[in-house]
Length: 133
Image (cartoon, rainbow, N blue to C red; front, side):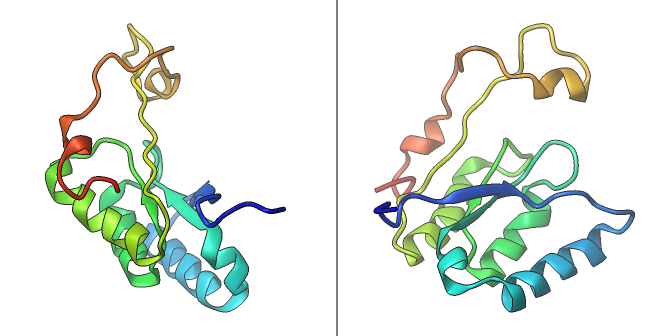
Protein backbone atom coordinates (compact mmCIF):
# COMPACT_ATOMS: atom_id res chain seq x y z
CA UNK A 1 0.00 0.00 0.00
CA UNK A 2 3.00 2.29 0.25
CA UNK A 3 2.13 3.42 3.77
CA UNK A 4 5.09 4.29 6.00
CA UNK A 5 5.57 2.80 9.44
CA UNK A 6 3.57 5.65 11.02
CA UNK A 7 0.44 4.22 9.36
CA UNK A 8 -0.95 2.13 12.23
CA UNK A 9 -4.12 0.19 13.03
CA UNK A 10 -5.67 1.32 16.31
CA UNK A 11 -8.08 -1.11 17.99
CA UNK A 12 -9.92 -1.45 21.28
CA UNK A 13 -9.02 -4.67 23.08
CA UNK A 14 -12.70 -5.70 23.14
CA UNK A 15 -15.08 -7.13 25.68
CA UNK A 16 -14.34 -8.43 29.15
CA UNK A 17 -16.37 -11.66 28.74
CA UNK A 18 -16.95 -12.00 32.47
CA UNK A 19 -13.25 -12.24 33.39
CA UNK A 20 -10.98 -9.29 32.58
CA UNK A 21 -7.80 -11.03 33.77
CA UNK A 22 -8.43 -14.15 31.64
CA UNK A 23 -9.41 -12.03 28.63
CA UNK A 24 -6.21 -9.99 28.83
CA UNK A 25 -4.21 -13.22 29.16
CA UNK A 26 -5.89 -14.51 25.95
CA UNK A 27 -5.14 -11.20 24.22
CA UNK A 28 -1.46 -11.50 25.19
CA UNK A 29 -1.25 -15.11 24.04
CA UNK A 30 -3.04 -14.41 20.75
CA UNK A 31 -0.78 -11.44 20.08
CA UNK A 32 2.31 -13.58 20.65
CA UNK A 33 1.19 -16.67 18.72
CA UNK A 34 -1.36 -15.70 16.06
CA UNK A 35 -0.26 -12.35 14.63
CA UNK A 36 2.31 -11.97 11.89
CA UNK A 37 5.24 -9.62 12.40
CA UNK A 38 3.74 -7.32 9.73
CA UNK A 39 0.53 -6.95 11.76
CA UNK A 40 2.42 -6.56 15.04
CA UNK A 41 4.44 -3.74 13.46
CA UNK A 42 1.24 -1.74 12.79
CA UNK A 43 -1.01 -2.71 15.70
CA UNK A 44 -1.83 -0.14 18.40
CA UNK A 45 -4.29 -0.61 21.27
CA UNK A 46 -6.56 2.01 22.77
CA UNK A 47 -8.24 2.02 26.13
CA UNK A 48 -11.90 2.92 26.46
CA UNK A 49 -14.32 4.17 29.03
CA UNK A 50 -16.26 0.91 29.24
CA UNK A 51 -14.03 -2.17 29.54
CA UNK A 52 -10.33 -1.39 29.80
CA UNK A 53 -8.57 1.67 31.17
CA UNK A 54 -4.94 2.71 31.05
CA UNK A 55 -4.23 0.81 34.28
CA UNK A 56 -5.40 -2.40 32.59
CA UNK A 57 -3.61 -1.88 29.28
CA UNK A 58 -0.32 -0.14 30.07
CA UNK A 59 1.23 -3.34 31.51
CA UNK A 60 0.09 -5.26 28.39
CA UNK A 61 1.45 -2.48 26.19
CA UNK A 62 4.83 -2.51 27.91
CA UNK A 63 5.06 -6.31 27.95
CA UNK A 64 4.26 -6.73 24.25
CA UNK A 65 5.94 -3.52 22.99
CA UNK A 66 2.49 -2.61 21.74
CA UNK A 67 1.89 1.15 21.41
CA UNK A 68 -1.05 2.53 23.40
CA UNK A 69 -3.48 5.41 22.90
CA UNK A 70 -5.21 6.52 26.11
CA UNK A 71 -8.17 8.41 27.47
CA UNK A 72 -7.75 10.62 30.53
CA UNK A 73 -6.86 8.69 33.65
CA UNK A 74 -6.53 9.21 37.36
CA UNK A 75 -2.77 8.85 36.81
CA UNK A 76 -1.16 12.19 35.84
CA UNK A 77 -0.28 12.55 32.16
CA UNK A 78 3.20 13.69 33.20
CA UNK A 79 3.74 10.11 34.46
CA UNK A 80 1.88 8.27 31.69
CA UNK A 81 3.08 10.08 28.55
CA UNK A 82 6.81 9.23 28.96
CA UNK A 83 6.01 5.54 29.61
CA UNK A 84 3.61 5.31 26.69
CA UNK A 85 5.81 7.25 24.29
CA UNK A 86 8.80 5.07 25.15
CA UNK A 87 7.00 2.17 23.45
CA UNK A 88 6.19 4.26 20.35
CA UNK A 89 9.80 5.48 20.17
CA UNK A 90 11.19 1.96 20.65
CA UNK A 91 9.24 0.91 17.55
CA UNK A 92 10.31 4.03 15.65
CA UNK A 93 6.72 5.24 15.24
CA UNK A 94 5.59 8.83 15.77
CA UNK A 95 3.36 8.87 18.91
CA UNK A 96 -0.34 9.49 18.42
CA UNK A 97 -3.01 10.57 20.86
CA UNK A 98 -6.76 10.77 20.50
CA UNK A 99 -8.14 13.88 22.13
CA UNK A 100 -11.83 14.30 22.77
CA UNK A 101 -14.24 16.00 25.11
CA UNK A 102 -17.66 14.72 26.10
CA UNK A 103 -20.63 16.31 24.43
CA UNK A 104 -21.86 19.29 26.50
CA UNK A 105 -24.49 18.25 29.04
CA UNK A 106 -23.35 14.63 29.12
CA UNK A 107 -23.98 13.00 32.49
CA UNK A 108 -23.94 9.23 32.11
CA UNK A 109 -21.03 7.16 30.81
CA UNK A 110 -22.99 6.42 27.65
CA UNK A 111 -23.71 10.16 27.15
CA UNK A 112 -20.02 10.94 27.59
CA UNK A 113 -19.09 8.48 24.83
CA UNK A 114 -20.62 10.93 22.35
CA UNK A 115 -17.88 13.43 21.62
CA UNK A 116 -18.22 17.19 21.44
CA UNK A 117 -17.53 18.83 18.09
CA UNK A 118 -14.27 20.31 19.41
CA UNK A 119 -11.87 19.95 22.32
CA UNK A 120 -11.97 23.19 24.24
CA UNK A 121 -8.92 22.39 26.37
CA UNK A 122 -5.78 20.58 25.26
CA UNK A 123 -3.59 18.96 27.93
CA UNK A 124 -0.41 20.94 28.58
CA UNK A 125 1.36 17.65 29.26
CA UNK A 126 1.33 16.82 25.57
CA UNK A 127 3.77 19.70 25.05
CA UNK A 128 6.10 18.40 27.78
CA UNK A 129 9.61 17.23 26.98
CA UNK A 130 9.40 13.73 25.50
CA UNK A 131 5.68 13.98 24.72
CA UNK A 132 6.31 13.74 21.02
CA UNK A 133 9.17 14.09 18.56
